[in-house]
Amino acid sequence: MTDGHLTDLLIEEALISDLDEVQRLDALVTAHPKPDHWRLLIEGSRTSPESRFFLVARRGDRLLGLIAGEIRVWEFGSPPCGWIYTVAVDPDARETAVGTRLFQAICARFRRQGASTVRTMVGRNEHLVLSFFRSQGMMAGPFVELEMEIRP
Amino acid sequence: MNLQMATRHALFAVLELASRPDEQLSALDIADRYDISANHLAKVLRVLGRAGIVEAVRGVGGGYRFVGKAKRLSLMDIVSLFEPIGSPDHSTAPGARTPQGQALRLVMTEIEDTARSTLSSITVETMLKLAGRMDAP
Ligand SMILES: CC(C)(COP(=O)(O)OP(=O)(O)OC[C@H]1O[C@@H](n2cnc3c(N)ncnc32)[C@H](O)[C@@H]1OP(=O)(O)O)[C@@H](O)C(=O)NCCC(=O)NCCS
Image (cartoon, rainbow over all chains, first blue to last red; front, side, top):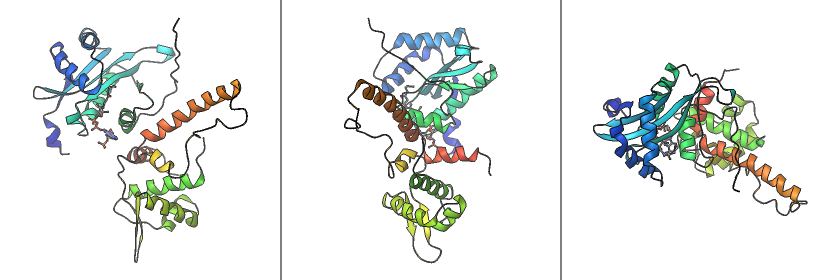
């Protein structure tokens, strides 16, 4: 891949008007439409730009990828830490470093706000997403995710 | 968790060859670098050759070279050629059907699932980057 390939790729904060494109991308990646979820995330990033982040990658008027996260402070006793809760790249634009650019951009914002760690949670069997985060240098951290059913 | 000796040798051989994709190295070259038995390594290299991960180069200066895809080949792909991660069936082991045996199975499955997930999501290229961040002896 050449630099030229990436020069027209713009990584920036999402706008409310991106909602349709965000939902189009979500539909390509997951089977659960969730318009309210995306709207709240984008709105949150607009109203709390120091702690909540929703970035998109665009080329022209096409949205090629998104990444969202936030800074959480003293959660489980942990100092300020950037959390990534979603990343997705249009299948037609994958493996051209769009995901890497989004990851680097959100980490730069986390760093600017004082976080020195970035954290995420990925399904054990989601090898593609796991391989992606590991290729960025991420490893298992000091926390273990625990859960149980609480049905009545 | 410990890996068997053959598995460790295979991982070292693949990482060494993949870090120098344009070169061919003999079993002795690799064995010297990791202080392991060249005889044992030669057997391991044959298994890796049959799996299409390395290729034997014949003739003077012959040796092995890496022909896999470093960006796609996971540690699990290599490990599983030499040993299973987690035993698939413990149901016939003594005590397996008792509640304690079943509870133990649940705990062991949690450990094995994590090991499999870790090994499956680390590619040879990611491992080379990781090694690049470690201090040389
Ligand atoms: C994971 C994902 C974001 C990666 O995006 P991408 O733009 O293709 O990633 P990049 O091109 O920046 O790749 C970076 C690294 O990730 C790894 N990677 C990417 N695609 C891979 C694949 N198909 N197989 C193995 N590793 C892969 C590689 O190590 C790659 O490094 P390389 O380019 O040197 O090979 C993208 O595949 C995706 O959107 N997947 C679905 C995500 C999803 O399900 N999201 C919803 C829940 S969070």
